[in-house]
Image 1 (cartoon, rainbow, N blue to C red):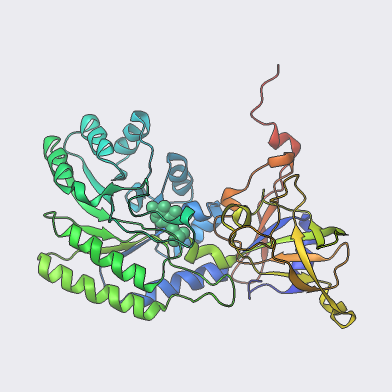
Image 2: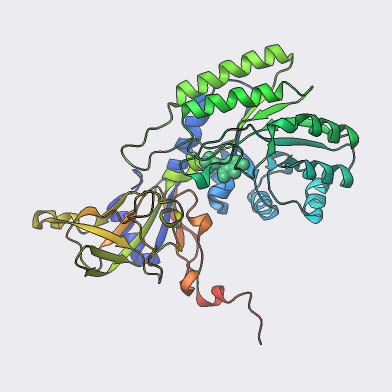
Length: 413
Ligand SMILES: Cc1ncc(COP(=O)(O)O)c(C=O)c1O
């Protein structure tokens, strides 16, 4: 549970806005932004927020007020960022797909495109000779908390493989394009050693190009989902990046900007999902507690076998009566709709005080890749979202979904 939320406030909000309910804490987001800014002493730096992690207007406005720019993966993410006040020169677009119309709109609006393939460089050249662009390099190695979140190495579809630098140079020259930056992002939840390794590989590739302005090392800073997770030693990480970029700039003969683009680190800890226990049942092997949410509101356990901290309000007072191991299941029709799983998806019951119908579940670390990946599967209404601002005041930032929302794009037939 976010340290900035009290149980009494959660009870009050659940009562007022219905469960399931997302609650986000402004204080938490600001604290994470501050940590990043103070960890890196290198002056010429730009932190971008990978806004795919959580793209609500209220969140984007908070991040913007911290002086953090945007990494966007789609035109609509860009439009959402602009609506929240971002200028086009504060946005970098990195997307795998590349339609002519999307690239035309990006170029017409002077949004820098970070090319993920040689075909994307060609497309820019065909639309607007003489443009600037950066390139996403696959440095030949990757790492993520799971195979699905590893975005580097020979099995990854992302970026331009590092052995194609000569071809990149040829295409840039052919269309008179100016390469302003080198980028790599090797995966989500990479530890210090992975970061340092990828920094070195990326800087070595950057050296091969004349007159770039920035090197972007992507996102992937890990957060602590469970007690055994190791946090990133931020000061050591920041000092090592600073040292390397100071040396690189000196050697390169130009003050190169250090860019990073974390998503998870900025927002994971700000979010909680509140849900109510609706049934308790048993098989010979397991006790199940079924809550009124599911993989439609947090797909991470089903997709990646991810762990989220879970606690119950109400049940604590019953701790004296004993505890029991429960599998916490969602209310969808899928067998995979369970929240307490191992990394490989097998059931992993957790010990809780005896649960009762009506107990409120608090699922923590819910800010990143949960709300932004939500769906209306099983025609369930989407939860409302509430922001608890830095003064502790609550504000509804997204209303609860309705059946009309679910059917909003269907035509009369
Ligand atoms: C290109 C790029 N940059 C940054 C990120 C953010 O990663 P994280 O949320 O792990 O920091 C992602 C995540 O998918 C990404 O694809």
